[in-house]
Image (cartoon, rainbow over all chains, first blue to last red):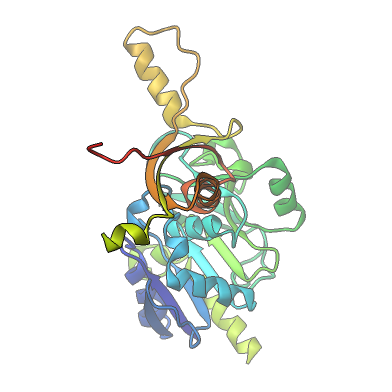
Length: 232
Length: 98
Protein backbone atom coordinates (compact mmCIF):
# COMPACT_ATOMS: atom_id res chain seq x y z
CA UNK A 1 0.00 0.00 0.00
CA UNK A 2 1.38 3.39 -0.93
CA UNK A 3 0.68 6.48 1.10
CA UNK A 4 1.02 10.09 0.00
CA UNK A 5 1.55 12.60 2.79
CA UNK A 6 0.75 16.15 1.73
CA UNK A 7 3.35 18.66 2.88
CA UNK A 8 2.24 22.28 3.24
CA UNK A 9 4.34 25.17 4.40
CA UNK A 10 3.57 25.07 8.12
CA UNK A 11 2.68 21.37 8.32
CA UNK A 12 4.38 19.79 11.33
CA UNK A 13 2.94 16.28 11.70
CA UNK A 14 3.95 15.10 8.23
CA UNK A 15 7.12 13.38 9.43
CA UNK A 16 5.36 11.75 12.37
CA UNK A 17 2.84 10.07 10.11
CA UNK A 18 5.54 9.11 7.60
CA UNK A 19 7.56 7.54 10.44
CA UNK A 20 4.62 5.40 11.53
CA UNK A 21 3.78 4.26 8.01
CA UNK A 22 7.31 3.74 6.79
CA UNK A 23 9.34 2.74 9.83
CA UNK A 24 6.74 1.10 12.09
CA UNK A 25 4.58 -0.50 9.39
CA UNK A 26 7.07 -0.82 6.48
CA UNK A 27 4.78 0.81 3.92
CA UNK A 28 5.78 2.89 0.93
CA UNK A 29 5.38 6.60 1.55
CA UNK A 30 5.82 9.57 -0.75
CA UNK A 31 5.95 13.07 0.69
CA UNK A 32 3.82 15.19 -1.67
CA UNK A 33 4.77 18.86 -1.80
CA UNK A 34 1.68 21.10 -1.88
CA UNK A 35 2.51 22.28 -5.38
CA UNK A 36 2.59 18.76 -6.75
CA UNK A 37 -0.61 17.70 -8.47
CA UNK A 38 0.11 14.09 -9.42
CA UNK A 39 -1.25 11.51 -6.99
CA UNK A 40 -1.71 8.72 -9.55
CA UNK A 41 0.71 6.37 -7.72
CA UNK A 42 -0.95 6.88 -4.31
CA UNK A 43 -3.49 4.59 -2.61
CA UNK A 44 -4.13 6.60 0.56
CA UNK A 45 -3.71 10.37 0.81
CA UNK A 46 -2.94 11.67 4.30
CA UNK A 47 -3.45 15.36 5.04
CA UNK A 48 -1.36 15.85 8.17
CA UNK A 49 -1.63 18.13 11.17
CA UNK A 50 0.12 21.43 11.63
CA UNK A 51 -0.53 25.01 10.66
CA UNK A 52 -0.82 24.97 6.87
CA UNK A 53 -0.12 28.40 5.40
CA UNK A 54 0.22 29.72 8.93
CA UNK A 55 -3.48 29.04 9.63
CA UNK A 56 -4.04 32.46 8.08
CA UNK A 57 -7.61 33.60 7.45
CA UNK A 58 -9.05 30.37 8.92
CA UNK A 59 -7.43 27.04 9.71
CA UNK A 60 -7.19 25.07 6.49
CA UNK A 61 -8.78 27.77 4.35
CA UNK A 62 -5.86 28.53 2.05
CA UNK A 63 -4.60 24.96 1.77
CA UNK A 64 -7.77 23.87 0.00
CA UNK A 65 -6.71 25.66 -3.19
CA UNK A 66 -3.25 24.12 -3.44
CA UNK A 67 -2.61 21.84 -6.45
CA UNK A 68 -2.07 18.87 -4.13
CA UNK A 69 -5.48 19.35 -2.49
CA UNK A 70 -7.24 19.73 -5.83
CA UNK A 71 -5.66 16.41 -6.78
CA UNK A 72 -6.79 15.02 -3.41
CA UNK A 73 -10.39 16.03 -4.17
CA UNK A 74 -10.10 14.17 -7.46
CA UNK A 75 -8.60 11.16 -5.65
CA UNK A 76 -11.53 11.15 -3.21
CA UNK A 77 -14.08 11.50 -6.01
CA UNK A 78 -12.77 8.23 -7.44
CA UNK A 79 -13.67 6.54 -4.17
CA UNK A 80 -10.05 6.27 -3.04
CA UNK A 81 -9.02 6.77 0.57
CA UNK A 82 -8.24 10.18 2.06
CA UNK A 83 -7.63 10.94 5.72
CA UNK A 84 -7.14 14.29 7.42
CA UNK A 85 -5.73 14.54 10.91
CA UNK A 86 -6.15 17.71 12.99
CA UNK A 87 -5.28 20.55 10.57
CA UNK A 88 -5.89 18.00 7.81
CA UNK A 89 -9.46 17.57 9.10
CA UNK A 90 -9.87 21.35 9.02
CA UNK A 91 -8.64 21.42 5.41
CA UNK A 92 -11.08 18.66 4.37
CA UNK A 93 -14.05 20.54 5.89
CA UNK A 94 -12.96 23.82 4.29
CA UNK A 95 -12.89 22.05 0.91
CA UNK A 96 -16.30 20.53 1.47
CA UNK A 97 -14.99 16.96 1.28
CA UNK A 98 -16.42 16.62 4.79
CA UNK A 99 -19.41 18.54 6.17
CA UNK A 100 -19.29 21.14 8.95
CA UNK A 101 -16.45 23.26 10.26
CA UNK A 102 -13.97 23.33 13.14
CA UNK A 103 -14.14 26.47 15.22
CA UNK A 104 -12.34 27.83 18.26
CA UNK A 105 -12.39 25.60 21.33
CA UNK A 106 -15.20 26.30 23.78
CA UNK A 107 -12.88 27.21 26.65
CA UNK A 108 -10.40 29.28 24.60
CA UNK A 109 -7.49 27.02 25.47
CA UNK A 110 -5.18 25.39 23.02
CA UNK A 111 -5.74 21.85 24.30
CA UNK A 112 -2.72 19.55 24.33
CA UNK A 113 -3.67 16.39 26.15
CA UNK A 114 -4.60 12.74 25.93
CA UNK A 115 -8.27 12.09 25.69
CA UNK A 116 -10.54 9.08 25.69
CA UNK A 117 -12.98 8.47 22.89
CA UNK A 118 -15.32 5.76 21.72
CA UNK A 119 -15.06 4.12 18.31
CA UNK A 120 -18.57 4.49 16.93
CA UNK A 121 -18.35 2.58 13.69
CA UNK A 122 -16.08 -0.24 12.61
CA UNK A 123 -17.29 -1.35 9.18
CA UNK A 124 -14.87 1.00 7.45
CA UNK A 125 -11.29 0.53 6.26
CA UNK A 126 -10.29 3.15 8.85
CA UNK A 127 -11.71 1.46 11.93
CA UNK A 128 -11.98 -2.25 11.16
CA UNK A 129 -9.06 -2.84 13.54
CA UNK A 130 -11.20 -1.71 16.47
CA UNK A 131 -14.26 -3.17 18.19
CA UNK A 132 -17.49 -1.20 18.04
CA UNK A 133 -17.79 0.90 21.18
CA UNK A 134 -14.13 0.34 22.06
CA UNK A 135 -12.70 3.07 24.27
CA UNK A 136 -9.32 4.30 23.08
CA UNK A 137 -7.03 7.11 24.19
CA UNK A 138 -5.33 9.39 21.70
CA UNK A 139 -3.40 12.66 21.95
CA UNK A 140 -5.12 15.87 20.88
CA UNK A 141 -3.44 19.22 20.22
CA UNK A 142 -5.57 21.99 18.82
CA UNK A 143 -6.99 25.46 19.37
CA UNK A 144 -9.77 25.15 16.80
CA UNK A 145 -11.19 21.67 17.19
CA UNK A 146 -14.77 22.39 18.15
CA UNK A 147 -16.86 20.63 15.55
CA UNK A 148 -19.78 22.71 14.34
CA UNK A 149 -22.52 22.14 11.80
CA UNK A 150 -26.13 23.24 11.49
CA UNK A 151 -28.69 20.97 13.21
CA UNK A 152 -29.80 19.49 9.87
CA UNK A 153 -26.22 18.57 8.99
CA UNK A 154 -25.66 17.03 12.42
CA UNK A 155 -28.83 15.00 12.06
CA UNK A 156 -27.68 13.75 8.65
CA UNK A 157 -24.28 12.77 10.09
CA UNK A 158 -25.91 10.80 12.90
CA UNK A 159 -28.59 9.24 10.68
CA UNK A 160 -25.99 8.08 8.17
CA UNK A 161 -23.64 6.76 10.83
CA UNK A 162 -20.86 9.16 9.83
CA UNK A 163 -19.61 9.92 13.34
CA UNK A 164 -16.58 7.67 13.77
CA UNK A 165 -15.00 8.87 17.04
CA UNK A 166 -16.70 10.58 19.99
CA UNK A 167 -14.94 12.10 23.00
CA UNK A 168 -15.81 10.22 26.18
CA UNK A 169 -14.59 9.46 29.66
CA UNK A 170 -12.55 6.34 30.41
CA UNK A 171 -15.65 4.26 30.81
CA UNK A 172 -17.06 5.37 27.47
CA UNK A 173 -19.72 7.80 28.73
CA UNK A 174 -20.17 10.97 26.74
CA UNK A 175 -20.67 14.28 28.50
CA UNK A 176 -19.73 17.90 28.46
CA UNK A 177 -17.06 17.42 31.17
CA UNK A 178 -15.03 15.03 28.98
CA UNK A 179 -15.59 16.96 25.77
CA UNK A 180 -12.30 18.88 25.43
CA UNK A 181 -13.41 21.54 22.97
CA UNK A 182 -17.20 21.87 22.89
CA UNK A 183 -17.75 19.81 19.74
CA UNK A 184 -21.41 19.21 18.97
CA UNK A 185 -22.43 15.67 20.00
CA UNK A 186 -18.83 15.21 21.28
CA UNK A 187 -17.67 14.61 17.71
CA UNK A 188 -13.95 13.85 17.40
CA UNK A 189 -13.94 12.32 13.93
CA UNK A 190 -16.31 11.85 11.00
CA UNK A 191 -16.35 10.32 7.54
CA UNK A 192 -18.12 11.34 4.35
CA UNK A 193 -21.26 9.57 3.23
CA UNK A 194 -19.33 7.00 1.21
CA UNK A 195 -16.86 6.35 4.02
CA UNK A 196 -13.69 6.82 1.97
CA UNK A 197 -12.82 10.21 3.47
CA UNK A 198 -12.03 10.41 7.19
CA UNK A 199 -11.35 13.49 9.27
CA UNK A 200 -10.35 13.45 12.94
CA UNK A 201 -8.92 15.94 15.42
CA UNK A 202 -7.07 13.33 17.56
CA UNK A 203 -3.63 12.18 16.45
CA UNK A 204 -3.43 8.39 15.90
CA UNK A 205 0.10 8.80 14.53
CA UNK A 206 1.26 10.03 17.93
CA UNK A 207 0.04 6.82 19.52
CA UNK A 208 1.40 4.14 17.20
CA UNK A 209 4.85 3.31 18.51
CA UNK A 210 5.28 1.37 21.80
CA UNK A 211 8.17 3.63 22.75
CA UNK A 212 5.64 6.45 23.21
CA UNK A 213 3.69 4.44 25.76
CA UNK A 214 0.43 4.27 23.83
CA UNK A 215 -0.40 2.29 20.70
CA UNK A 216 -4.15 2.90 20.53
CA UNK A 217 -3.71 4.64 17.17
CA UNK A 218 -1.86 1.78 15.52
CA UNK A 219 -5.02 -0.29 14.85
CA UNK A 220 -6.27 2.45 12.54
CA UNK A 221 -3.28 2.06 10.23
CA UNK A 222 -3.18 -1.72 10.58
CA UNK A 223 -6.86 -1.85 9.68
CA UNK A 224 -6.11 0.12 6.53
CA UNK A 225 -3.45 -2.38 5.50
CA UNK A 226 -5.93 -5.20 6.03
CA UNK A 227 -8.36 -3.46 3.71
CA UNK A 228 -5.66 -3.37 1.03
CA UNK A 229 -5.25 -7.14 1.29
CA UNK A 230 -8.99 -7.60 0.86
CA UNK A 231 -9.00 -5.29 -2.14
CA UNK A 232 -6.17 -7.26 -3.78
CA UNK B 1 1.11 55.84 -22.85
CA UNK B 2 0.59 52.53 -24.59
CA UNK B 3 -0.09 51.03 -21.21
CA UNK B 4 -2.90 53.45 -20.38
CA UNK B 5 -4.82 52.67 -23.58
CA UNK B 6 -4.51 48.96 -22.80
CA UNK B 7 -6.22 49.30 -19.42
CA UNK B 8 -8.68 52.05 -20.38
CA UNK B 9 -11.70 49.73 -20.18
CA UNK B 10 -10.71 48.60 -16.69
CA UNK B 11 -11.53 50.43 -13.50
CA UNK B 12 -9.88 50.17 -10.15
CA UNK B 13 -12.14 49.38 -7.22
CA UNK B 14 -11.62 49.26 -3.52
CA UNK B 15 -13.58 46.67 -1.63
CA UNK B 16 -14.29 46.33 2.04
CA UNK B 17 -15.30 42.87 3.18
CA UNK B 18 -16.84 42.32 6.61
CA UNK B 19 -16.90 38.71 7.80
CA UNK B 20 -18.93 37.89 10.90
CA UNK B 21 -19.71 34.66 12.70
CA UNK B 22 -23.22 33.40 12.10
CA UNK B 23 -25.43 34.07 15.12
CA UNK B 24 -25.76 30.34 15.82
CA UNK B 25 -21.98 29.89 16.19
CA UNK B 26 -20.54 30.49 19.67
CA UNK B 27 -17.77 33.07 19.88
CA UNK B 28 -15.58 32.24 22.89
CA UNK B 29 -13.09 34.96 21.89
CA UNK B 30 -15.87 37.55 21.96
CA UNK B 31 -16.94 36.27 25.37
CA UNK B 32 -13.36 36.61 26.63
CA UNK B 33 -13.17 40.20 25.35
CA UNK B 34 -16.45 40.95 27.06
CA UNK B 35 -15.01 39.72 30.32
CA UNK B 36 -11.95 41.96 29.74
CA UNK B 37 -14.24 44.94 29.22
CA UNK B 38 -16.10 44.07 32.38
CA UNK B 39 -12.76 44.04 34.27
CA UNK B 40 -12.20 47.56 32.92
CA UNK B 41 -15.41 48.53 34.63
CA UNK B 42 -17.76 48.35 31.64
CA UNK B 43 -20.56 46.32 33.12
CA UNK B 44 -23.01 47.53 30.51
CA UNK B 45 -21.73 45.27 27.69
CA UNK B 46 -24.16 42.47 26.98
CA UNK B 47 -22.57 41.09 23.83
CA UNK B 48 -19.24 41.08 21.97
CA UNK B 49 -18.82 39.27 18.65
CA UNK B 50 -15.50 39.30 16.83
CA UNK B 51 -15.29 39.23 13.05
CA UNK B 52 -12.82 40.09 10.30
CA UNK B 53 -12.41 43.11 8.09
CA UNK B 54 -10.60 42.67 4.77
CA UNK B 55 -9.59 45.43 2.33
CA UNK B 56 -9.01 44.56 -1.31
CA UNK B 57 -8.07 46.51 -4.40
CA UNK B 58 -9.06 45.03 -7.73
CA UNK B 59 -9.51 45.96 -11.36
CA UNK B 60 -12.66 45.07 -13.25
CA UNK B 61 -14.70 46.20 -16.23
CA UNK B 62 -17.41 47.64 -14.06
CA UNK B 63 -18.75 47.61 -10.55
CA UNK B 64 -21.18 44.75 -11.15
CA UNK B 65 -18.37 42.50 -12.33
CA UNK B 66 -16.25 43.47 -9.34
CA UNK B 67 -19.16 42.74 -7.00
CA UNK B 68 -19.77 39.37 -8.63
CA UNK B 69 -16.13 38.38 -8.31
CA UNK B 70 -16.03 39.48 -4.69
CA UNK B 71 -19.11 37.42 -3.83
CA UNK B 72 -17.42 34.38 -5.32
CA UNK B 73 -14.19 35.08 -3.41
CA UNK B 74 -16.19 35.37 -0.20
CA UNK B 75 -18.16 32.18 -0.78
CA UNK B 76 -15.05 30.18 -1.59
CA UNK B 77 -12.29 31.61 0.53
CA UNK B 78 -12.71 34.88 2.41
CA UNK B 79 -15.61 33.51 4.46
CA UNK B 80 -16.75 30.00 5.31
CA UNK B 81 -20.52 29.96 4.73
CA UNK B 82 -20.88 27.09 7.21
CA UNK B 83 -19.97 29.39 10.10
CA UNK B 84 -19.76 32.93 8.75
CA UNK B 85 -21.77 35.65 7.03
CA UNK B 86 -20.20 38.39 4.93
CA UNK B 87 -20.99 41.81 3.58
CA UNK B 88 -19.10 43.54 0.75
CA UNK B 89 -18.83 47.26 -0.03
CA UNK B 90 -17.30 48.30 -3.38
CA UNK B 91 -16.12 51.81 -4.28
CA UNK B 92 -14.48 53.04 -7.45
CA UNK B 93 -10.99 54.01 -6.48
CA UNK B 94 -9.87 57.64 -6.83
CA UNK B 95 -6.38 57.68 -8.40
CA UNK B 96 -3.73 58.82 -5.95
CA UNK B 97 -2.39 62.36 -6.35
CA UNK B 98 -5.42 63.68 -8.23
